[in-house]
Length: 255
Image (cartoon, rainbow, N blue to C red; front, top):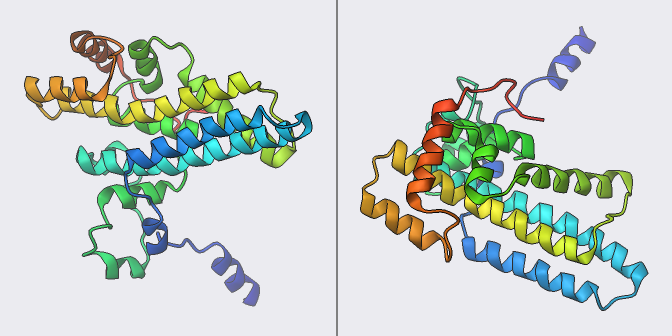
């Protein structure tokens, strides 16, 4: 009987803690840009070091890049959920989530939003999970759509490979084989992917679900790019096709 009680306690589910919700960062695009610029400067610093130190510094840079992206993606994701009033059922398959009683004390807090609660419940936003959720939110095959708009052909592969390489560095002590030029490209490509995640999703939902006016659509599109990848009309055409062709996929997370 004692053993049975111990096992039940060991496997008892715990609800979502208030402290985990509070750790979700606020949306701050300027802070994201500053951190990315520091990593670019760090690349230049590595060039001045001896080769044996360059290897360690390149490893550190990749790990820091992934941490920076994961940290800010949580803020971006929470911001999208709240700003676009996205339904939880479009993100989660669960009908309910458990929260601890300490969360009730914070219900009147401005920081305790729907976006922060859902993002904290998801805990991590690894590439496969992000792909699946962003597809459900946008009602289309997210990264294929993204590549069609940007003219890329491997944005998801680059995003996933970055995380795989980080894991190899941390868990398997495998040094990165990337050159400094490759690292600079990796920083730029993956940071752009994160920023455009917000911009493209806002436009898609604003146009096709939120009935944004033409004025608001054009203002948002033109203010988001120094040099737009395509015209807004082309964006609408591509997006409409992907939305029409979309069939929600299971399992929940793309590998």
